[in-house]
Image 1 (cartoon, rainbow, N blue to C red):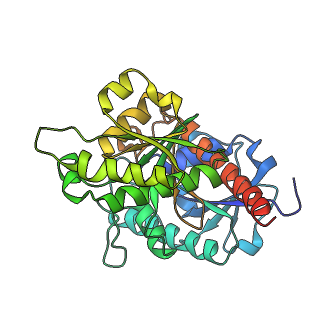
Image 2: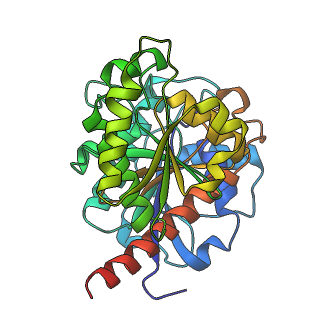
Length: 335
């Protein structure tokens, strides 16, 4: 391992879900320690509970209160909570929500001070994490606000498939009401920049999906096509809009470096057809590297030792890859 290894911060997520389970299972693979120093932020007593539940007696993390105390050659745990922890597997609780928020705030603080290099977020319950001090729709929105990134957008990554989302939280029926040429153009440019810098794609190609038309919707002609034409005139290889159903059925996405999905449903359907539960969410358009596993809290299997850690493991490795690609791009951009 290098003397100054990459430090990947990992937030514990909802202690009543599978977050800590997939974190510990992923970090049980010692190969990760050859490439980075994992730093988990959370309540150590909650981690101890899940470790016992999973019967991972041979797995260890060095518990510290401060980042200065971590072991660069091992997996580490920054303890943010000294009091007792009540685990209520399979359901949200006020304490779980509070600890989720504290882990995010603590990791964000260290990322801002550049004491860690990237963050991987374990899943939280977005409906319940909103508190008087944490009024965000999700973890992505929190970090976008903290790092002043109004153009942040989620890219779904599964092997060679990358799907950018124009809108993640709006119902499909509402998306057409907020679409503008300017919004689509911003998303195309953010996706193009991320493909070039974060994924090291040379002269990347982008396909844009269309909105389903009922004969009255004008979004495809008034928003999508003009935005695509302008982006193309600015030397971005973007094409479409393509009817989503046919595009997916014919697996046309394999011809492009990325796809821009207009609705969350479009993007998730395409993504899940390829990810098989092992995909990653990456937030582009930010000065930081932020990834997350594709699954949610999975309350239905919490504490049952049934969770697959592949997505969490891939989220850690993708964070490292993007850090490396950004460094290489920055080096060549200066020449």
